[in-house]
Amino acid sequence: MNNWLTICNITDIAPNTGVCAKVGEKQVAIFFHKRTDALYAISNYDPIGKANVLSRGIIGSIGDQLCVASPLYKQHFDLQTGTCLEDPSVHIDVYKVRQNSGLVQIHQ
Picture 1: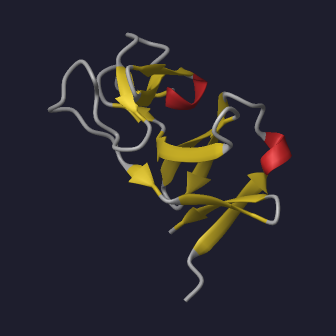
Picture 2: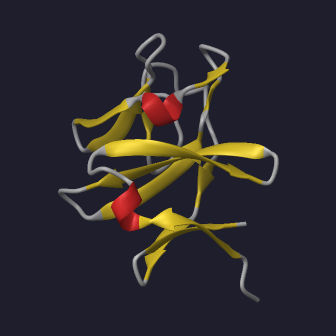
């Protein structure tokens, strides 16, 4: 069964930045990490700031954890697990994402 939704071309995402896409009723933040040539997809909703803003966050790493800093209160969310590094009791959704023939796709 093909449950992959094409979002955009990989060239539409500037390296080391994020974009937002509506997938069903949810907003998903998609990031392209150039150094590892990897895509990450998380909820765009910041549960601490209570706004859809994570796609505008800055990606980086803390130790070995690749994360995005919320543009509101600067909490860091792990791009692989969705866990807030400052408060591990807070989690956001993580989505399967892939690059397929130059297209960025989210698993539904």
